[in-house]
Length: 493
Image (cartoon, rainbow, N blue to C red; front, side, top):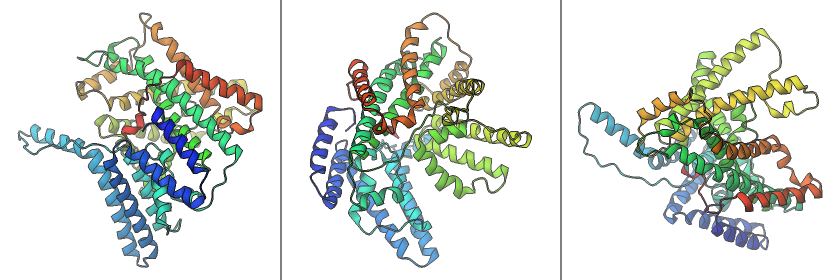
């Protein structure tokens, strides 16, 4: 069941009409039922996987908290991580590693005869697995108490707005909202409804309109990766950059909006990722819940920046490679992780050199440039840096998009094409045929990013502005939206 489908609109209408009539305890039980219906609509067989993961970590959390022996606590945490990561590895990476092993054996002259199973990837498994793991880790660290109420924990893992594509919510932020009666306010409903409408604009108008252009660019010729020898290659890369932002950010906005309407406050997952000037700022603005998860539960555990420069660079690379692998079982995703790891290492090295030479403050966040104190020259420098770094990000998106290329495009063809595209600037022929949609929808995307903070506080706007915004958003959806219920890109992760 996808957010941009008629079935979901009927589903959520029924959920809201029942939810508001119940008391707190019954609301929680009803939301568990509704969340399982939502997830089971895709494939009911994987409800058992979701239920097993929840029950296992719920039990581990209680056992860890009650256990007094340090070694036994550690063993229980390891058990939780092995089960969660084991399930994730089996369903998400079995085919990838099995095919890799087969190629290695063939390279050495062997003829493997073992069968390769084709495992179906359960939608959302990467998200709810990481969410459930964070609970047992936080209980082990003593950062929160284990919950005694099983239904509270089941709802924490399965809450339908953010179940299949995030944001990844920490238990210490979400469980208190589940345990206590929620306050439904006019402010929350108004902010929530606006986020829902805004999310549909990003998904149906920006992402789905860009999708046709992106798919054409990457699959125009069944015999070659023709995008890379086409003069419009960079425009297609721009289109994918705006598509994936609109798609994923749109999903998050809808999820957060649904939560607000029901009295929940879900974490922000995007700020202004294309209006920043360096890779460190990018990961503070893009998929925030995942990047902070990797920071807190992997990068810091590996030693962070506390063990010297060489170890810091190694930790950055390891974290980003695993981040790339989290997104998909493919060599291109790993390369995407390596690419961003190198960017982070180079940026850290540059900042270290700069710090030794100058104490001049570095402006990397749009909120700093929007202050009255920022002069025209500072704004212009900032815009130029954003423009340059946006192209750096687009190069990475080429790697990311290649992770889902059709089977006829082999890896070596991709590597050759990747090098070509970096120096393939557009000529006039055929250029303007796709320039207009990319420019218009790209500008809309950048405008929404530049007003990100205001978009999150819709209830503070004047009544006239609220009406104007609602009408404009609805007109955009009605006039330019794609109403075919296209799936969200991050459902495959």
